[in-house]
Length: 210
Image (tube, rainbow, N blue to C red; front, side, top):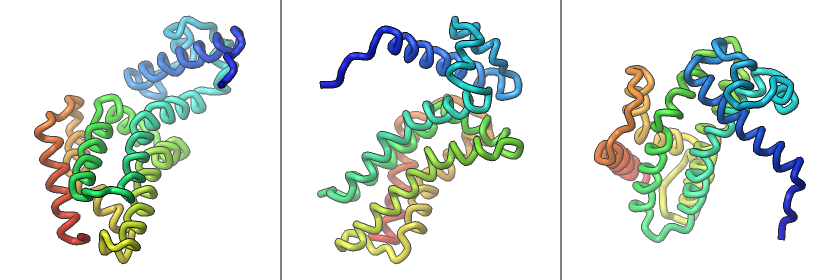
């Protein structure tokens, strides 16, 4: 059984969470450059010194916002991708995965963060790399590994698992992601739209690789 944290450590954890939550809202509302550490401290109801005790500078704080937001979407998807290896109904489970992937990626908060990271990527390339490695890159790597395993056991025909992973990803997400990114519409798509994009993407994927 894990030992309970001392009171001081629990307070530190709560403050850190409050800072990250306040910073997330501030960055998404005002952008990276338009957000100050003073504003984050005020919103989190902590001192500016406390913010700097947890995060040495604004870029590190923004990287934590990226990690916190992206992992909330990528962690469940990553686990679902790995479970495909043991799937007894691969087509159904691929559809379920595609639907979950779209639902998580097209969350309004995730779209706003993605736009912000892209806007700052030229000046702060580490931010873009951080977002990619935790989110799309991690998912694509898991898909490639899983498709390779499904190829070895004869469930799929995948001469190039990395290419197959990329094609699966963009068959499912290409149109809705581009639409959301470029048109600036933060309205979450309906379940019917999600299912149509996901199901048609999987159908096309399996036509090539089943």
